[in-house]
Every structure is written in structure tokens, then in C-alpha cells.
Length: 476
Image (tube, rainbow, N blue to C red; front, side, top):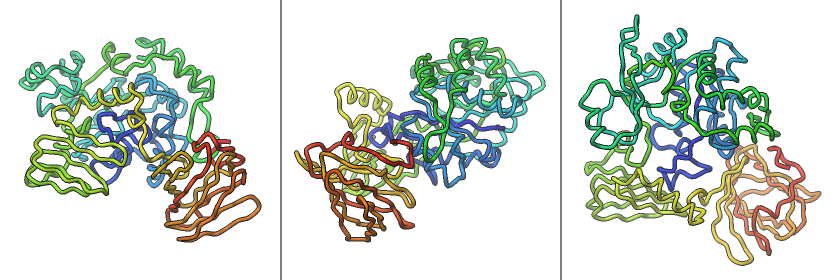
């Protein structure tokens, strides 16, 4: 079996921690690693790393690969999409990639941001699904509901599949119900949560896309032939300009709408695997440890007389008093306070922020770069103060600025600095000034992360005042 991980979501209901550059799947929310790392780890007992592929948004590609590099993920198994076009197009493109490698490939599709706690049952269920997929069935896993849930779609179980005691036809797909309907489903034994995990032959899903979503299928050859390796590190795949324009022009459809609700090949396999989609902050109630008062607390928090609340902080002290059923999430540039029962509506709040032009809706105070990150600490009319962090072995581009000078001071690690024709080795507490117009490059020359404090002085203090001459990441 080949595994395809879909990791292109924005996770807006986990705002303010989840932003465009650091969405939910790239955060450590529950388990030993980030959600995408945990997803890969749970698949490895069945699917070797050489047979895992991943689709994500181009803005998240480098950070996704960086997180998966310790697990030996292969760079050209990651496809960076130019925009979000939902699951039908992403799955179709991955299926085209796989049939070129193996015409009989079995393809498992897995969201990158879900939790599965019963690993043994998960692997056993996937093995059963693989056998069904070899017979040209489209297998979808159904989760036995444990509560009336209005945030999930449902599958209604149909007749038993001949020759298979645990597999069923799907009678119908049901959209997210209201509470009264969800309570009715819970009383019956033939409704399951639709968890978005699928197993099929790559060739079979392409046949069904051809029949039911011709507007997508007819362009898959052209799009897959437009894949190319990115310039410079790390060498994942992206679409060329023509392929990117074509991809962006197509309809945004889920695989459920495009194929599953129409196909006669769909099979439901009940899966009691301890699944949770961790779709919003209130989902932590089911997957996280609580204190004696039912609170889920992390960070520098002083909580008194609080019950059944979720309070997430970082370094600065947060004092909370008398909260009940409340969500508090603090980040350096944004604070969320929300009634727990309204956690699904955080997505609406983020849309309002974006509509009103608040950059905090999409961007955090820390900006991810291929070489590391930077955070703006303070700014004024003619100065900008940053903290810059560079990963071991990485370097910024050779560049110059026409409108600003810079002063760097090393606070952790070791830096090698190129300034015009000179090279300097800086250690902790060493400083250097970069004049306007000087060609310069910052390199982490040590085994530990490098942190510097940068002060910019000038009349144009943004990323547009960069002229690049050399770059390991193909950005010249």
C-alpha cells in the first residue's frame, strides 16, 4: 500500500495558534510530535517511508518537509499545490503520480491533522481495507459515533457486502446534521462518522473520477506532466507556471461530492480506532489530560476557581479567575477568549478579521523562512527590531539593501558573516554592522540553532528592499 497524506488545510478554528504558515497539522497539539509527524509515525508499521506521499499548500511546503526530515521523508514525494482546491483534485493528481510508478498501486488517503489512539485496531482495519481495495472497491472508514456531533458528516450503512462479514455498502452520505438529527443518528446503529480516510486502487479512483468528475479528470494528465522539482533546497515538487494556472482554474470539490456520493463501488468498513478530527479547541476535551477541575492548561498560567476550561499560554503570565466552559488562547500578537460552546464559530471570527484587513487573521508575529524564522519585536518610523533564528547548516541568501543598514548581535550559537569581500566568525555577544548597499550573507556555522538580534535603520524597512545574488533555495 502507498500512503497519501493530505496536509493543505488552514485549521482556522485553531486560531490564533493556527495561521497560514503554521496551520493545525504543523502544530504540536496532542501526542509526541506535531500532527503531521504523528500521522506519518502511525502509518509506518504498515507503509514504509519510501511509499508515503504528501500534498500541501506551497506556503507550508518547506516547514512540512523540515518537520518530516527526521523521519527520512523523501523530498520529491511532497507536492506543493499553488492553492487549495479541496480533496478531489489533490487525490486525482496523487493517483496519477502513483499509477505511473505502479499500475496496481493501492492508495490509502489520510488527513494530516487527526488523532487515532487505537493503533492496533487502526493497522488491522487498514489491512482489511487493502484486501477490499484489491477487488476494486472504494473503501471508506466509518467511525461509530459516541455523541451527537454536528461538526461531522455521516455515512449510513447499507446492506452487507457479499463474502465480507465486516464490510457494507453505503446507503447514503449525510451532510453535517443539526443537533436533533444527530441525536436521532446516535439512537440508531447504522450511522457512522465520515472520517475522510479512504483506501482504493489508484487506477480505480481515476476510473471513477473519469465517470463522475470529468471536468477534473480531463486535466490530470496535463497537471501531472507539469510537476517539476523546485530550484535549490529541499527539492520537493511543484507545478510549472502553466500547470499552476490550470490547477488554480479548476473547481474546488471534495472527493465525497465528486465521486463517493455517486459511485456504486463505495464500501463502508466500520473502524473503532479511537479517532478524533481535533477540529476545534473544544476537541481537546476528548484527547488531552485534565486537572481535577476539568481544565486543560498549558503555559505560564495561574488559574483560580476555574472549571472545564481550556487555557493555553506561552511565556508571559496569564491570570484567570472564575472561568467556566471558556477557551483562552494567548500568542505573542493575538489573544482569543471564547465560550467553549462557540468554538466552531472561531472560523467565522477569523473570516471577519481577514475581511476587516487585520493581518493577524492569517499571519503570526513569527515568519517562517526556508532557513529558519524571524520575529518582529519592535518598530518605529525609522527602525525595526527583529529576532532571527537560523537552523544548523542553513544560510540566508547573499543579498544587499539600498534603503537600510543593519546591526547584528549573536545571542545563541555561532555565526559566519560574509560582508562584501570579508568573512567574519561571530560568537555569543559579538556584533557586526552591515552598511547600506553591502553584499552580505548570514550562515549558521555551528551545530546548534543560531539566534541573532537585528536592528534595521532606514527609510524602507520591509522585505521589498532585498536584492538577492545567490540563494540555496532558488529565490534569486
